[in-house]
Amino acid sequence: MEYEVRYYFKKSRYEDIVSRLKNIKDLNMNDRCYEKTLQYDHPDQKDSFYSKEIDARFRIRITKNDKETKCKISFKKRLNDTIKKDVNKEEEKEVNFDYNDYDNLIYILENVIKMKLIESYERYRTTFTNDDVEISLDEYPFGLALEIESKRNSDIDSNNIIKYWVNVLGLNIKDAYRLSWDDKYTSLCKEQNIKSYKNVTFDKKMPEIRDDLWK
Image 1 (cartoon, rainbow, N blue to C red):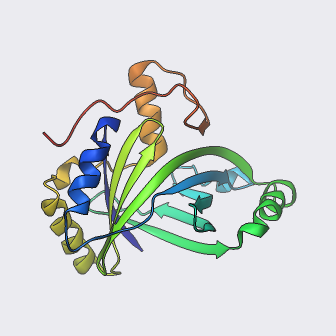
Image 2: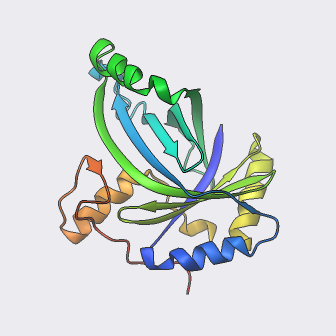
């Protein structure tokens, strides 16, 4: 299981957020990485991951910086009670694979299994970690996301850990955004009357997050 909460901020808060996290002695700052994520759907529409009954995401992701390149497959599924409590609890399975196999994997998914590419996005991610928590600062083309994820695998421990760090960062657990990045992006496009794209990249015209949870 995965336990997490997520908050969105406007781009101008980047330096402030990094400074806040760097000044917390209990956290270790990791290298900033570029990520490209492809999201596919099941080849049989009756088993679509995007249906309300399944409500899941199947993702292929490349993560790279000057030191290394990593790839993984992940399947993430909302549960019936995902948003009934303060902390998101979701099913997630991951498989790491060699970057040299990336092109062959995409070929098999699209041409053999016949999975359909639904959407993709790029972002930069910087993580701040210790034994209990991973806090990720994600730079999307439309704004910033701050994700607080427990490294523990029990309801009680994970909820307590996440609420503790929400308080440390001066946030309110009730202000967390409960849906996926694509839900946030789509809603921003509608609010700001901007064309939405299936491939969300930094070179396209994007909406912007304008609200601010920190004063």
